[in-house]
View 1 (tube, rainbow, N blue to C red):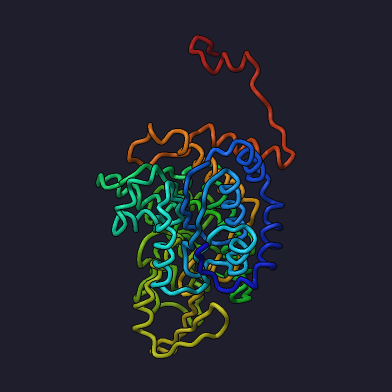
View 2 (cartoon, rainbow, N blue to C red):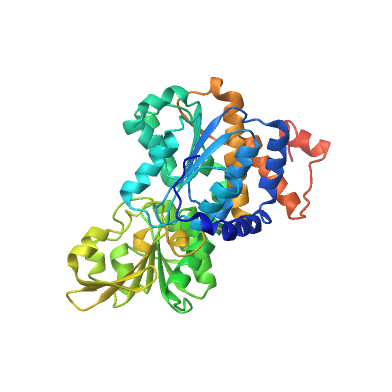
Length: 418
């Protein structure tokens, strides 16, 4: 079995952490039991490009139990948990190509190693597998029956391909599932981003001026948690509806050029490029902490920061201090990559439970329906979304009501009025 991990000797620790995460992934556990019995993925090869974490390990194990041959590579150079990668190889016999801190060349060599297996299904977190197939591995399209995508950023890239009629095979946008973005993006990103910032810096957030760039579901979650820690939160937005929502939610809303001047901590979660630029670095207070929790490390213009800095040093793990000509310092966290995974452990397992249940069941849906699917980006079927919500409630011991026959009739009719 081919693989590339840091050290197989870390497998013991990784196995224990994988088991711990599994205790909080009740929905995925139920999916795994179903998969083990029915083998809906039998005979299929799946290449997964995801953050190599304890939760991901439970997902790929579930896919294997479903009969698939699975290979895993990292979707971000700094998000890999090396002990987990080692355990996947040693304990679960699942090929993994992931090393925390790998350079760009190694990152793409790992993606190509996963694609070398000639997968039937691609599973993405950022669309790097799809884009690599599009750009340089088009020969593999004949083997691929479909794919899944888990991030907002990835869905944007794939919808762009579809719009240009360049998408080569159908994709299910797992990110669009309500049980994914309403929970993973909001509660997962909110908590784990705070976790990453605090682990890297040990700063007190209470009383600080905390700027959140982007008020999508990830930004909403982070703003909510930062305010809960006592921070004074300012939202930066370009969408008037989201900006209005932030105002109505009780936040200050300001342009980034104004928000940067007062910020103690500023975090990007937009999915776009160069949100924080040269002119913003130059107006920041001394010691401002700058971090990113969007998928790619393009939201902060790091080349511009490098250019205007006269000195750079690593002052803590995952904290690089840039001194500008003025003498002011800017502290960049995690090389501008996903801080919740660079310096922390990513989302809690209980929220990833729903996201990865969506991934697994989306694969099953592709396996059963790929002949009917066109080269488009599809949303997760509603019945899957609702079933996952139902199972999650059951796992939490929560019961809900059902409609009476009279209520059903009322909702389905037009005759019955006031």
